[in-house]
Image 1 (tube, rainbow, N blue to C red):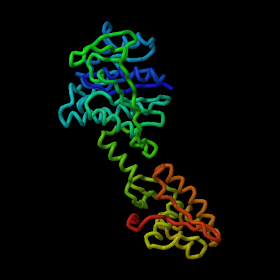
Image 2 (image 1 turned 90 degrees about the vertical axis):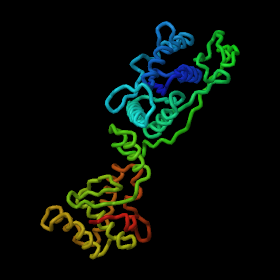
Image 3 (image 1 turned 180 degrees about the vertical axis):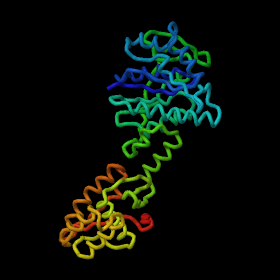
Image 4 (image 1 turned 30 degrees about the horizontal axis):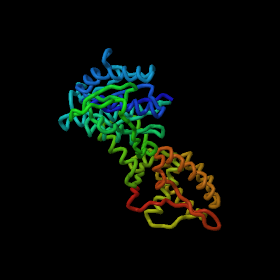
Length: 359
């Protein structure tokens, strides 16, 4: 599995080598490194990390014998505005919106790559960038992905001359004039647990190139949707919390039948009477003419009430599967439920009348 380190950075690219060192000590050295930053941040990273002569990334790799980490100018991703222009810095609300959209899109892309592990560091850049990249990982992150913040020991923390603990003695100066030996520094990685929302999200959130705001709005809909069912008779489909689910006519009629019962406050039913058959056929007639082949086949199947129970059991299972395919873990409130009472199961739709729109 390919390991990717994604870091947000600003004018302190030291967090990149510090994080690489911490991952190296944990035997989790990444295969490649990507930065999300501004135009000014890229210039600083190119100078301090990737300069062919003095770049600290190259120095770090040589110090610890790491030869195969992929990190070059192409891996530095500069935030762009809506017109595609590179952002030199993030100073306005519009800049912040652009950064949010850019970060969200990049995290989505990385998490869509198969056979990869994404490790996101939120140690660098503006505070808003760290929040945004962590939030994006919570939406798109998979089980194998990680989030962390690197921690350097005092007094090396925030020292612009410190990049990583060296093997040999190297002296730098603290702000108060004290000399510090970088070989005596300690750097650790604080892994941050995060809630993975991905498994509860629908395909449009995970794959579409939406803005940050649109993604959050849709994710909120998926995580905590308002329970509501609307019936579309024209193409015998139902909308559950706004998600369209196309159903075969016989399944649509079954769902409609139980929805009508729920609207009337009727109890669970064990279909077995002539009236039950008539009620179901009435629902089927709302989308199929009596002379239609589908209607005639069902009418023939249900010529005796005792056949209705087996019919409901069969189509209820398939109908529930259709709902689960579209809604995933959010399907539970919408599936047809059963309650086992002697001498058999009873079926019902566990929704309030106010949550059902029949017309």
